[in-house]
Amino acid sequence: MRVLITGICGFVGSRLARAVQERLAGAEVLGIDNLLRPGSEINRQHLADHGIHFTHGDLRLRSDVESLGGCDWVIDAAANPSVLAGIDGKSSPRQLSEHNLAGTLNILEYCRLHKAGLILLSTSRVYSIRDLAALPMCVHNRAFTLDEQRLNLPGVTASGVTETFPTRAPISLYGATKLASEIMASEYSFTFQLPVWINRCGVLAGGGQFGTGEQGIFSYWLHAYAARRRLRYIGFGGKGYQVRDAFHPDDLADLLTIQIKRDPPADAVFNVGGGPGNAMSLAQLTEWCGAHFGAHTPEADESPRAFDIPWSVMDNSRSSRELGWKPKRSLSSILEEIAEHVRTHPDWLKRCGSL
Image (tube, rainbow, N blue to C red; front, side, top):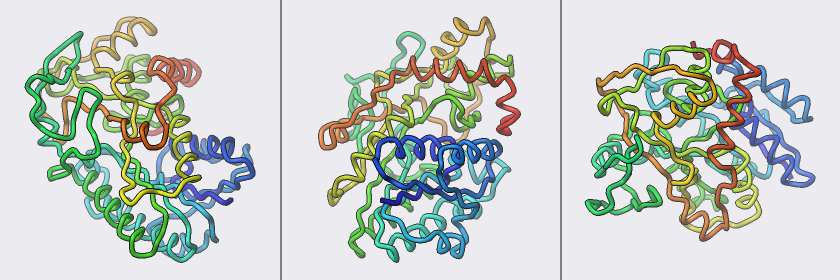
């Protein structure tokens, strides 16, 4: 079996490459990456050390994709993953669309021609910002918590956001490119009888992640805190009560190997995340950092920021019920892994272009 991973030199792509290689006996893992992200060259060498073939190419270029040769499955882990992409001054809306949507279309054509299956890594950011922001919240232990007694919107439970939660606008330009990619992948699956899985991922986290303030927040926060960099609680009263759940790429790899071995259902959209047990607020994360790295106080910035939401936790019930999957790695073990990386790579933020 040949498995092609796009964005293979990114944090998620590189970790998945090694994990899939271990989990699928006899599988040949190969990948493509344009190496635009600072730090990706580091992972390129790690992949070579594990005998994983790498092609330097850009998914936006049809000729680069066509040069890859055939495979049995594609894991699409390539994207501009920032929710502020297209408005942050680092990329334009057109560049974002070319990376996240046009690249997916080229991969879908590749799958059609080679009759390959596709696992599309999508995002929790396809869910409506307005509806998420309107969820009733209370505060417990310095974290926003869903107020179930006042909850009247379908698609969300105490276990988190389900696949039926609204995806209506606004969802950010980034979220729109990923939702459009989902729609096209589903249409290709139906029209050309291609096996397609769509995984709406929550926050992935682990040691070696190229974190920023907009993406990879757990890694970024630990590295910036330990380096005594400026940190801010932005919006929501400037108290850091906003909550995210996190899970590890190794747990995602477990899910992908299950999916590769099965035929996808007609509706193959699955939420994948850490769930309530792996959820934490920024204030709680700061407290954890204080116990490991000493005191450092973030600044309060009450000004709102585009596309921010107070609470996002993924409900994995469908993945658990239909695929027998749930995350094994605890949030504490993930944070300990990141903390060890912080200690051994004190210049990491500079190396991955986050300063």
